[in-house]
Length: 186
Image 1 (cartoon, rainbow, N blue to C red):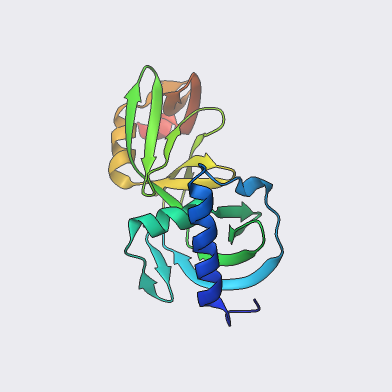
Image 2 (tube, helix red, strand yellow; image 1 turned 45 degrees about the horizontal axis):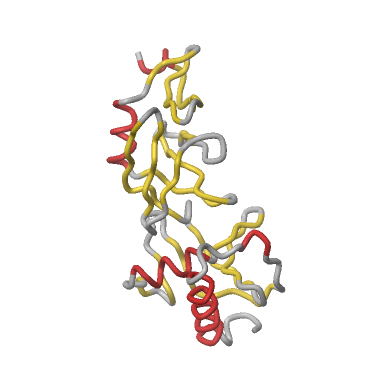
């Protein structure tokens, strides 16, 4: 496939590969390094909505299948199978953490594609501050793929935050994730 000439064929083959791999659990995309085949007209918006050719993908199962074969290499995102790799656009993070639970000192997030993620050493929480001072919180989901934590969840997280060594943040799985200097909150 070159450019976007065979997009429908590629989308069909990607969907078939994702379905087949999904029957055996999460595909091992981190092990796949197929040749680059071009770009596909898929955009993942900041709110977690996936668009194909300018139209929202309205089937959650289809989005979940595509999300299962998503891979990040450097600053680029790709849908990969064992035999092909196509680029797509991601406006911010590819996933959105839409809810969380706290139990036994562990924060477990749920994403818009039904992944569950336990915040800890392998899945850290981080907050970036915009030039205007607006926080953008993230949690690592897998292999370089993050979820933007939605606003309602972030406000709930702030309510359970704590101060440690002059920083305000969260604790999960025995780790402290600092957000901001505690004196900046006063």
